[in-house]
Image (cartoon, rainbow, N blue to C red; front, side, top):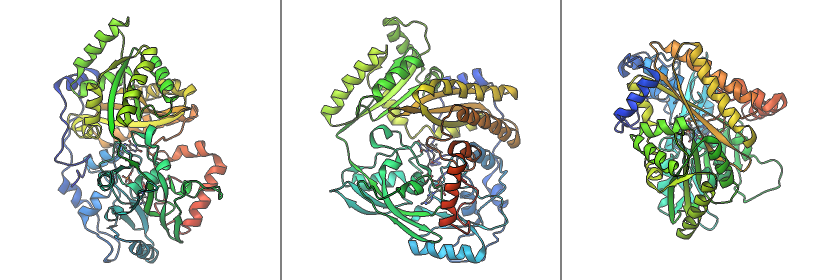
Length: 530
Ligand SMILES: Cc1cc2nc3c(=O)[nH]c(=O)nc-3n(C[C@H](O)[C@H](O)[C@H](O)COP(=O)(O)OP(=O)(O)OC[C@H]3O[C@@H](n4cnc5c(N)ncnc54)[C@H](O)[C@@H]3O)c2cc1C
């Protein structure tokens, strides 16, 4: 069971330490504590389905409500205030490819549209039913969640695409393997969703992004099926996998996927380093990225994120410890930046990498802290999303955005994004706390991940207006700096207005031509991506 209007398992909560609440009140004041609308009230607002009954379709109001929205901030606001303007008319849970083909026929007969649905963790409006005259069927893939094959000679595993993160790792662990794809939404998101959104896991530095892991698969499209062979490499023309990666449910339903897996590593540790400022941290990160297979993840928080995340986890005293350590190497009264890194491999490899990482970070004035903070990060890596529930209950809303750019424009873009968000809020007379980290490191650049927290307002429309103004300003900043509108969350509805600037007119017409070829009737997830 999942929370219907928040994140994750209702049995799990992430309480806020008292120090964290004081920090938020000091920085932001108090937010509105208007109570959430009750589940029954929202349930009663679900309209009667316009679809005729069919064995493949559930028109149950609760099922439709639970598939109505994803996890973006506007989705949260809609669910918490009950101001939801669209619901799917039916939800279908296919168990095989034939049922997906049958569903295409039902959609043709009823002039319905189909929204492929993985874990519903989209943060950009991917799975929300559009305002449309046509009935909407949400196709929940989670019943198709089996491992179909494991080729241990080639380290390739075939899964049905509705398999969730924990299910993937459980199946593989029984045979001594891992996929190594750990987005923060891992607990709820699915393999099909990862492929369809070009997802990136926290340890992409070692295992690669989903596009490196996705070797081939089977796709059902309204004009027929497409089998993409899993090959180690091929020069046989453009790679069809690239059409499916990031297709956001518009080009077909991914029914199964072959993925590249790795033997479970003998050892994995997470360590921490404090830097005196973001510039020295970034210089160290670039140096680390320059050495192949050294770290499996690197995440460098700015000073505000360092202070906020340590306060949110009740570990403010660690900042004092870092102060003391940095003062010993001559840095007094400075704002510290925390880097978390992961080392993965054999015992000997991890030992060797650990001393090399320490050597490199020390060359940039970094203070390595042995495992305590790294262990804390590992323990809470999938718990952080639960903080969204707690913050909301205390009167605060939280949202994130992300991009990636070459190193040469990274820090200027980060500064520009912080100003864009802060200026948007101050223009409306509202407070906001903004912080960032650099993560997903490449030789030529990195991702910027920005989080902002603000006091909840007393109406849904005010909050959505505030969100929209700040999102637009930040997206425009990304475009002006030549970044990507999304490094990992995809396009959906929220990033769609900016895709044209990134791809250009010819690029967009190529994508539209692919869509028209694979889905000439416009049946699949219209309004998203293109
Ligand atoms: C708290 C939180 C943390 C997150 N952290 C990360 C992160 O670290 N890295 C990251 O990459 N993303 C992250 N995300 C974003 C989100 O989890 C990803 O976009 C994820 O890949 C979506 O997977 P899903 O299974 O939930 O797909 P859904 O949200 O259900 O769907 C997303 C899109 O994929 C399409 N789709 C889904 N399954 C299929 C299929 N079988 N065939 C065709 N199309 C399909 C849908 O139509 C839709 O357009 C996070 C989200 C949240 C809420």
